[in-house]
Image (tube, rainbow, N blue to C red; front, side, top):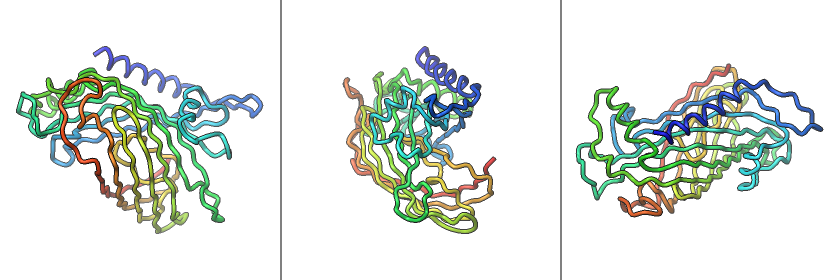
Length: 315
Protein backbone atom coordinates (compact mmCIF):
# COMPACT_ATOMS: atom_id res chain seq x y z
CA UNK A 1 0.00 0.00 0.00
CA UNK A 2 2.99 2.27 0.58
CA UNK A 3 3.69 2.69 -3.18
CA UNK A 4 0.08 3.73 -3.86
CA UNK A 5 0.05 6.23 -0.98
CA UNK A 6 3.36 7.79 -2.08
CA UNK A 7 2.21 8.15 -5.71
CA UNK A 8 -1.13 9.69 -4.72
CA UNK A 9 0.56 12.03 -2.23
CA UNK A 10 3.11 13.16 -4.83
CA UNK A 11 0.58 14.03 -7.51
CA UNK A 12 -1.87 15.71 -5.11
CA UNK A 13 0.94 17.79 -3.62
CA UNK A 14 1.96 19.03 -7.08
CA UNK A 15 -1.64 19.81 -8.05
CA UNK A 16 -2.43 21.57 -4.78
CA UNK A 17 0.71 23.73 -4.96
CA UNK A 18 0.04 24.72 -8.58
CA UNK A 19 -3.65 25.43 -8.01
CA UNK A 20 -2.91 27.76 -5.07
CA UNK A 21 -0.16 29.69 -6.81
CA UNK A 22 -1.05 33.14 -8.11
CA UNK A 23 -0.32 33.78 -11.81
CA UNK A 24 2.99 35.58 -12.22
CA UNK A 25 3.46 38.57 -14.50
CA UNK A 26 6.95 37.98 -15.79
CA UNK A 27 8.67 40.29 -18.22
CA UNK A 28 10.55 38.86 -21.18
CA UNK A 29 13.93 39.97 -19.78
CA UNK A 30 13.26 38.18 -16.47
CA UNK A 31 13.07 34.86 -18.33
CA UNK A 32 10.71 33.32 -15.78
CA UNK A 33 7.77 31.01 -16.28
CA UNK A 34 4.23 32.34 -16.03
CA UNK A 35 1.97 29.74 -14.43
CA UNK A 36 -1.78 30.04 -14.73
CA UNK A 37 -4.33 28.16 -12.59
CA UNK A 38 -4.48 24.55 -13.86
CA UNK A 39 -7.42 22.91 -15.58
CA UNK A 40 -8.17 19.56 -13.93
CA UNK A 41 -9.72 16.73 -15.96
CA UNK A 42 -10.81 13.29 -14.80
CA UNK A 43 -11.17 10.47 -17.34
CA UNK A 44 -12.83 7.20 -16.42
CA UNK A 45 -13.32 4.11 -18.56
CA UNK A 46 -15.07 0.98 -17.32
CA UNK A 47 -16.51 -1.89 -19.30
CA UNK A 48 -19.64 -1.91 -17.12
CA UNK A 49 -20.93 0.78 -19.48
CA UNK A 50 -20.85 -1.89 -22.21
CA UNK A 51 -22.32 -4.58 -19.97
CA UNK A 52 -19.09 -6.63 -19.76
CA UNK A 53 -16.43 -7.27 -17.12
CA UNK A 54 -13.22 -8.51 -18.73
CA UNK A 55 -9.93 -7.68 -20.54
CA UNK A 56 -9.27 -3.90 -20.34
CA UNK A 57 -11.80 -3.54 -17.57
CA UNK A 58 -11.03 -0.18 -15.96
CA UNK A 59 -8.96 2.95 -16.52
CA UNK A 60 -8.83 6.08 -14.39
CA UNK A 61 -6.74 9.18 -15.04
CA UNK A 62 -6.51 12.58 -13.35
CA UNK A 63 -4.69 15.28 -15.34
CA UNK A 64 -3.76 18.88 -14.54
CA UNK A 65 -3.24 21.15 -17.57
CA UNK A 66 -1.02 24.22 -17.21
CA UNK A 67 -0.72 26.99 -19.81
CA UNK A 68 2.67 28.67 -19.67
CA UNK A 69 5.03 31.11 -21.33
CA UNK A 70 8.73 31.95 -21.32
CA UNK A 71 11.41 29.72 -19.78
CA UNK A 72 10.66 25.98 -19.60
CA UNK A 73 11.10 24.06 -16.36
CA UNK A 74 13.71 21.32 -15.99
CA UNK A 75 11.05 18.65 -16.55
CA UNK A 76 9.81 20.41 -19.69
CA UNK A 77 13.36 20.65 -21.02
CA UNK A 78 13.75 16.91 -20.49
CA UNK A 79 10.59 16.28 -22.50
CA UNK A 80 11.74 18.66 -25.24
CA UNK A 81 14.94 16.65 -25.64
CA UNK A 82 12.86 13.66 -26.79
CA UNK A 83 10.99 15.62 -29.50
CA UNK A 84 11.19 18.54 -31.90
CA UNK A 85 8.94 20.66 -29.65
CA UNK A 86 10.88 23.84 -28.94
CA UNK A 87 10.45 27.48 -28.05
CA UNK A 88 10.39 28.75 -31.64
CA UNK A 89 7.50 30.70 -33.12
CA UNK A 90 6.10 31.83 -29.74
CA UNK A 91 3.13 29.52 -30.26
CA UNK A 92 1.00 28.48 -27.26
CA UNK A 93 2.36 25.63 -25.17
CA UNK A 94 0.85 23.50 -22.42
CA UNK A 95 2.33 21.26 -19.78
CA UNK A 96 0.41 18.48 -18.01
CA UNK A 97 0.92 16.32 -14.95
CA UNK A 98 -1.19 13.24 -14.35
CA UNK A 99 -1.84 10.16 -12.28
CA UNK A 100 -3.56 7.01 -13.53
CA UNK A 101 -4.37 3.37 -12.97
CA UNK A 102 -5.39 0.72 -15.53
CA UNK A 103 -6.39 -2.88 -14.90
CA UNK A 104 -6.76 -5.96 -17.08
CA UNK A 105 -8.41 -9.33 -16.41
CA UNK A 106 -9.29 -12.51 -18.34
CA UNK A 107 -12.89 -13.26 -19.23
CA UNK A 108 -13.36 -16.00 -16.62
CA UNK A 109 -13.71 -14.46 -13.16
CA UNK A 110 -14.39 -17.72 -11.26
CA UNK A 111 -11.26 -19.77 -12.06
CA UNK A 112 -8.53 -19.47 -9.41
CA UNK A 113 -5.79 -21.24 -11.37
CA UNK A 114 -3.87 -19.67 -14.25
CA UNK A 115 -5.92 -19.54 -17.48
CA UNK A 116 -3.45 -20.39 -20.25
CA UNK A 117 -5.60 -19.30 -23.18
CA UNK A 118 -6.66 -15.87 -21.88
CA UNK A 119 -4.84 -12.65 -21.09
CA UNK A 120 -2.98 -12.19 -17.80
CA UNK A 121 -4.28 -10.31 -14.79
CA UNK A 122 -2.40 -7.00 -14.58
CA UNK A 123 -2.48 -3.58 -12.97
CA UNK A 124 -0.60 -0.46 -14.12
CA UNK A 125 -0.15 2.50 -11.75
CA UNK A 126 1.70 5.50 -13.17
CA UNK A 127 2.55 9.17 -13.14
CA UNK A 128 2.64 11.15 -16.39
CA UNK A 129 4.19 14.40 -17.61
CA UNK A 130 3.58 15.82 -21.07
CA UNK A 131 4.34 18.84 -23.21
CA UNK A 132 2.05 20.11 -25.98
CA UNK A 133 2.55 22.80 -28.61
CA UNK A 134 0.28 24.39 -31.20
CA UNK A 135 1.77 25.47 -34.52
CA UNK A 136 0.76 26.52 -38.02
CA UNK A 137 1.69 23.78 -40.50
CA UNK A 138 -0.27 24.80 -43.59
CA UNK A 139 0.52 27.61 -46.03
CA UNK A 140 -3.09 28.81 -46.26
CA UNK A 141 -4.17 32.37 -45.56
CA UNK A 142 -5.75 31.18 -42.31
CA UNK A 143 -2.89 31.56 -39.83
CA UNK A 144 -4.72 29.86 -36.97
CA UNK A 145 -2.71 26.96 -35.49
CA UNK A 146 -3.64 23.73 -37.25
CA UNK A 147 -1.11 21.28 -35.75
CA UNK A 148 -0.76 19.90 -32.25
CA UNK A 149 2.46 18.12 -31.24
CA UNK A 150 2.57 16.22 -27.96
CA UNK A 151 5.27 14.30 -26.13
CA UNK A 152 4.56 12.41 -22.91
CA UNK A 153 6.49 10.29 -20.43
CA UNK A 154 4.73 7.74 -18.23
CA UNK A 155 6.56 6.09 -15.34
CA UNK A 156 5.09 3.69 -12.82
CA UNK A 157 4.80 0.05 -11.86
CA UNK A 158 3.11 -3.06 -13.23
CA UNK A 159 2.15 -5.88 -10.87
CA UNK A 160 0.77 -6.31 -7.33
CA UNK A 161 2.20 -2.93 -6.26
CA UNK A 162 -0.15 -1.27 -8.77
CA UNK A 163 -3.04 -2.42 -6.55
CA UNK A 164 -5.29 -3.50 -9.40
CA UNK A 165 -6.77 -6.32 -7.31
CA UNK A 166 -7.48 -4.11 -4.31
CA UNK A 167 -9.09 -1.41 -6.44
CA UNK A 168 -11.26 -3.86 -8.36
CA UNK A 169 -12.30 -5.72 -5.19
CA UNK A 170 -13.32 -2.42 -3.60
CA UNK A 171 -15.49 -1.45 -6.57
CA UNK A 172 -17.02 -4.92 -6.94
CA UNK A 173 -17.83 -5.02 -3.22
CA UNK A 174 -19.52 -1.61 -3.42
CA UNK A 175 -21.56 -2.74 -6.43
CA UNK A 176 -22.39 -6.12 -4.92
CA UNK A 177 -21.00 -8.17 -7.81
CA UNK A 178 -18.74 -11.23 -7.94
CA UNK A 179 -15.03 -10.63 -7.45
CA UNK A 180 -12.38 -12.07 -9.76
CA UNK A 181 -10.74 -15.09 -8.13
CA UNK A 182 -7.45 -15.36 -10.06
CA UNK A 183 -5.51 -12.22 -9.15
CA UNK A 184 -2.77 -14.34 -7.55
CA UNK A 185 -1.72 -15.14 -11.14
CA UNK A 186 -1.16 -11.51 -12.15
CA UNK A 187 2.05 -10.19 -13.71
CA UNK A 188 4.96 -9.73 -11.32
CA UNK A 189 6.16 -6.35 -10.08
CA UNK A 190 8.12 -4.49 -12.77
CA UNK A 191 8.97 -0.78 -13.11
CA UNK A 192 7.30 0.59 -16.23
CA UNK A 193 8.17 3.39 -18.65
CA UNK A 194 6.62 4.67 -21.87
CA UNK A 195 7.69 7.65 -24.00
CA UNK A 196 5.13 8.76 -26.59
CA UNK A 197 5.06 11.34 -29.39
CA UNK A 198 1.92 12.22 -31.33
CA UNK A 199 0.93 14.80 -33.95
CA UNK A 200 -2.59 15.87 -34.91
CA UNK A 201 -3.31 18.10 -37.92
CA UNK A 202 -6.57 19.80 -38.73
CA UNK A 203 -6.89 19.39 -42.50
CA UNK A 204 -10.39 20.84 -42.74
CA UNK A 205 -11.39 23.58 -40.29
CA UNK A 206 -15.01 24.11 -39.22
CA UNK A 207 -16.65 27.52 -39.74
CA UNK A 208 -16.49 29.93 -36.81
CA UNK A 209 -20.24 29.61 -36.20
CA UNK A 210 -23.10 27.44 -37.40
CA UNK A 211 -23.12 24.00 -38.94
CA UNK A 212 -19.93 22.45 -40.28
CA UNK A 213 -17.48 19.58 -40.25
CA UNK A 214 -13.77 18.94 -39.90
CA UNK A 215 -11.20 16.18 -40.34
CA UNK A 216 -8.26 15.58 -38.01
CA UNK A 217 -5.67 12.87 -38.86
CA UNK A 218 -3.06 11.75 -36.35
CA UNK A 219 0.19 9.79 -36.22
CA UNK A 220 2.26 8.67 -33.26
CA UNK A 221 4.86 6.34 -31.79
CA UNK A 222 5.36 4.89 -28.30
CA UNK A 223 8.49 3.22 -26.92
CA UNK A 224 8.95 1.49 -23.58
CA UNK A 225 8.86 -1.77 -21.69
CA UNK A 226 5.11 -1.31 -21.06
CA UNK A 227 4.14 -0.57 -24.65
CA UNK A 228 5.93 -0.07 -27.98
CA UNK A 229 3.83 0.73 -31.05
CA UNK A 230 3.21 3.01 -34.02
CA UNK A 231 -0.24 4.36 -34.80
CA UNK A 232 -2.04 6.34 -37.48
CA UNK A 233 -5.66 7.34 -37.88
CA UNK A 234 -8.11 10.18 -38.09
CA UNK A 235 -11.53 11.44 -37.05
CA UNK A 236 -14.36 13.29 -38.77
CA UNK A 237 -16.77 15.58 -36.92
CA UNK A 238 -20.16 16.93 -38.02
CA UNK A 239 -22.11 19.41 -35.93
CA UNK A 240 -23.05 22.90 -34.79
CA UNK A 241 -20.50 25.39 -33.42
CA UNK A 242 -17.71 22.82 -33.55
CA UNK A 243 -14.85 24.06 -31.34
CA UNK A 244 -11.53 24.69 -33.04
CA UNK A 245 -9.72 22.09 -30.99
CA UNK A 246 -8.23 18.74 -31.99
CA UNK A 247 -11.03 16.25 -31.64
CA UNK A 248 -13.41 14.56 -29.27
CA UNK A 249 -12.29 13.32 -25.87
CA UNK A 250 -10.63 10.02 -26.67
CA UNK A 251 -10.09 6.78 -24.86
CA UNK A 252 -7.33 6.90 -22.28
CA UNK A 253 -4.24 6.78 -24.46
CA UNK A 254 -0.49 7.10 -23.95
CA UNK A 255 -0.92 10.82 -24.68
CA UNK A 256 -3.57 12.57 -22.62
CA UNK A 257 -6.52 14.22 -24.29
CA UNK A 258 -5.98 17.99 -24.29
CA UNK A 259 -8.95 20.40 -24.04
CA UNK A 260 -6.94 23.30 -25.43
CA UNK A 261 -9.26 25.97 -26.70
CA UNK A 262 -11.87 27.57 -24.46
CA UNK A 263 -15.18 28.43 -26.14
CA UNK A 264 -18.25 29.74 -24.30
CA UNK A 265 -20.68 28.87 -27.10
CA UNK A 266 -23.15 26.03 -26.82
CA UNK A 267 -22.50 23.42 -29.50
CA UNK A 268 -22.47 19.75 -30.29
CA UNK A 269 -21.20 17.29 -32.83
CA UNK A 270 -21.14 13.66 -33.90
CA UNK A 271 -17.76 12.07 -34.49
CA UNK A 272 -16.46 8.91 -36.09
CA UNK A 273 -12.87 7.84 -36.45
CA UNK A 274 -10.52 4.99 -37.18
CA UNK A 275 -7.03 4.21 -35.93
CA UNK A 276 -4.67 1.37 -36.79
CA UNK A 277 -1.69 0.31 -34.69
CA UNK A 278 1.28 -1.97 -35.15
CA UNK A 279 2.14 -3.22 -31.67
CA UNK A 280 5.72 -4.44 -31.22
CA UNK A 281 5.35 -4.99 -27.48
CA UNK A 282 2.50 -4.96 -24.95
CA UNK A 283 3.44 -6.08 -21.46
CA UNK A 284 -0.21 -6.78 -20.63
CA UNK A 285 -0.25 -9.54 -23.28
CA UNK A 286 3.44 -10.41 -23.73
CA UNK A 287 4.07 -10.74 -19.99
CA UNK A 288 6.88 -9.44 -17.82
CA UNK A 289 10.00 -8.19 -19.59
CA UNK A 290 12.61 -9.40 -17.10
CA UNK A 291 10.92 -12.38 -15.43
CA UNK A 292 8.97 -15.48 -16.44
CA UNK A 293 5.22 -14.83 -16.35
CA UNK A 294 1.92 -15.65 -17.99
CA UNK A 295 1.61 -14.44 -21.60
CA UNK A 296 -0.61 -15.02 -24.62
CA UNK A 297 -0.16 -14.92 -28.39
CA UNK A 298 -1.41 -11.59 -29.72
CA UNK A 299 -2.14 -9.95 -33.04
CA UNK A 300 0.46 -7.30 -33.97
CA UNK A 301 -2.00 -5.29 -36.09
CA UNK A 302 -5.04 -3.90 -34.26
CA UNK A 303 -7.54 -1.12 -34.89
CA UNK A 304 -10.25 0.96 -33.20
CA UNK A 305 -13.35 2.61 -34.68
CA UNK A 306 -14.62 5.15 -32.12
CA UNK A 307 -17.88 7.03 -32.62
CA UNK A 308 -20.13 9.12 -30.44
CA UNK A 309 -21.68 12.50 -29.68
CA UNK A 310 -20.26 15.46 -27.75
CA UNK A 311 -22.00 18.53 -26.30
CA UNK A 312 -19.75 21.53 -25.64
CA UNK A 313 -20.27 24.60 -23.46
CA UNK A 314 -17.44 26.75 -22.20
CA UNK A 315 -17.25 28.78 -18.99
